[in-house]
Length: 223
Image 1 (spheres, rainbow, N blue to C red):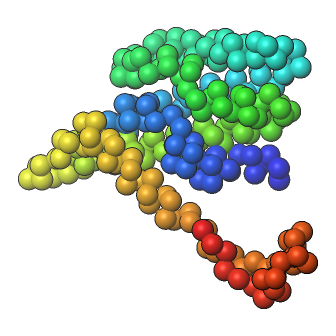
Image 2 (cartoon, rainbow, N blue to C red):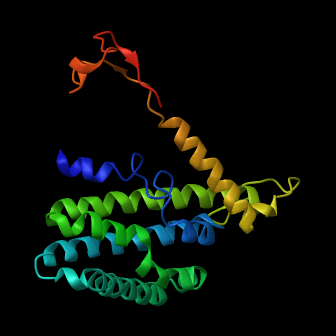
Image 3 (spheres, one colour):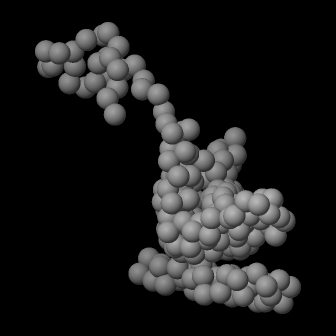
């Protein structure tokens, strides 16, 4: 159950893009098409899972003084491997992602999970953490890319969706459209996941006996 929790938290609750607002540069840059967003997301997921696994295995060996440089070396090795595989088998996607594929090495999502989770936890939870964060990142890129491609080009994964008499809004495949699309999706996710106020009492408060306003009646928690 704990491993399942580590996996699911990155999909919605702690989604790196739509909730924690990390990795914004590749999200805005490569999501002009759904295919590009999916490719970047899968590449990042592979690097996340593999780097989390290796860093967790080596956490007791890596000296604290060179922790971050060691993390970057490990991550860059997997990024290089991904780049070689894409260049060999999916050259069109490799060309489309361009420089942003190499920049996965310093993606704050990957470094953040290495620093905050992988170097402090066992291998299996670290793998589930990386997989969950990667899936959440991939889904967010796919949604933003689909939104922009459908409205900006009238296609989805190259399939024509809009009839010929409807003119696509090309602004959505430009930077301004990327910011707008991402903002709209973040707002929708924020509204959908907003927690309802809880009823709280003073019962558990350590200063209850000294407070003249203490009460056992529930009050609405303020935002």
